[in-house]
Length: 372
Ligand SMILES: C[S@@+](CC[C@H](N)C(=O)[O-])C[C@H]1O[C@@H](n2cnc3c(N)ncnc32)[C@H](O)[C@@H]1O
Image (cartoon, rainbow, N blue to C red; front, top):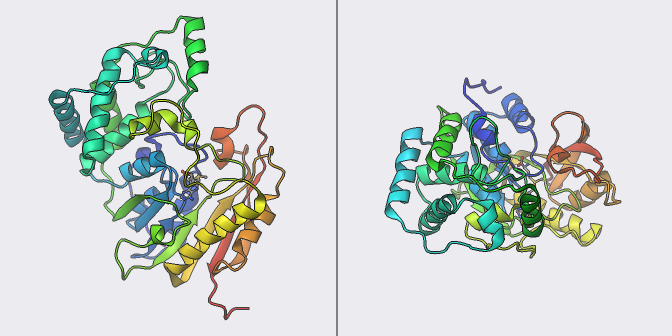
C-alpha cells in the first residue's frame, strides 16, 4: 500500500468538467493496490482525475483525451510551479503583447468587459504561440477555470458576466438572459482573480512524471507510453456514457480560449461514436485493445460506467459487449451507486429532464488467452 501524502488536493478543482468522477475513486484504488514505480493510464482522462491521483501518490501517468479543454486541464494538474512564477508570467504576457484578434459580436460585448476581453485575448494569443513552460501550463489551467461562472457577492472569482461554470451558455440564450435582467459585464481585476486562484491551487505537491496528450484513443499510437520500455500497470478510466457526445460544443468558450472558433462549433470530432450501441461498443473495444497493447502482463483495468436515462440502452450490456475480444477479461462488476447518490460522475451534467441511472465499476485483467 502506498502511503498517503500530506498534501493539498485543491488543484483537482482547478476547472470544472462534465462527468468527472470523484478523486477518491482512482486515489483509493491506487493507494491500496498500486506499487511504487507503477505506471498509470487514463485513455479518457477528462479533467485528469486519475492522473492527479497518480501524481499525489508519486506515480507516473499518461492521460489522453480528444477534447482540447480536457487535455489542457489535465496538463495543468501535472506541472510543478508556484505562485511567483505564475504571476511573473501573466504580468510578462500582459505587458508585452497587444491583442489583435478580439471577437466583437453582441454575445462577446455582454459576456466580458472590453478590457477583460482584451487581456484574455492577449493571454490566448500568447499561449497559442507557446505554452510549453510549467508556469504557462498552470496559468492556462487557471484561466480556463475562471473563464465563466456566477457573479459572487464578496469578491469576483470569474472573468465573465453571470454564467454557469460547468458548461458554456449558448450565445443567443445568454444574450437574451443578460438583456432581460440588465446584466452588464464588470471590469473585474484579472490579476487579482488569477493570483487568488494560483494561491489556492499551486501549493506544495509531490512531483511525478505525468503527460497529458490531446489525441483520439481509438488510434493505437495515441496510447504509446512516453518511453519505449515503459508498460502501464493500471488503466483507470471512465468513457463517455452512451449518448453524452456534446463535450466540445458544451465547452465552446473554453475551447475558444484554446484556439477554437468564437462561435459554437457543433462538429463532433474524434469522439467515440454514439450513432448506435454497436458502433459505440466497437469504438470502446478498440480503445481497450490499444490499452492492452501498451500494458504489462499483470495490468488491471478499472472502468466506471453508467447511463443516462434518455438513451434506452443497458450500460451493463453495452460495456460487457465492448470487452469481447478486447484483450481484457472482466473479473468483477461492482455497483458504484446511482449517479444522484452523493458526488457521482453524472451529477454535474444532469439537466432537469435527464434522470441518472446506476453506475458500475468493471474490473478486468489482461487476457493473455490462457486463462479460459
Ligand atoms: C466521462 S469523461 C471522463 C471524465 C474523467 N474520468 C474525469 O474525472 O474528468 C469522458 C471523456 O472521454 C473523452 N473522449 C471521447 N471520445 C474520445 C476519444 N475517441 N479519444 C479520447 N477521448 C475521448 C471526452 O472528451 C471526455 O472528456
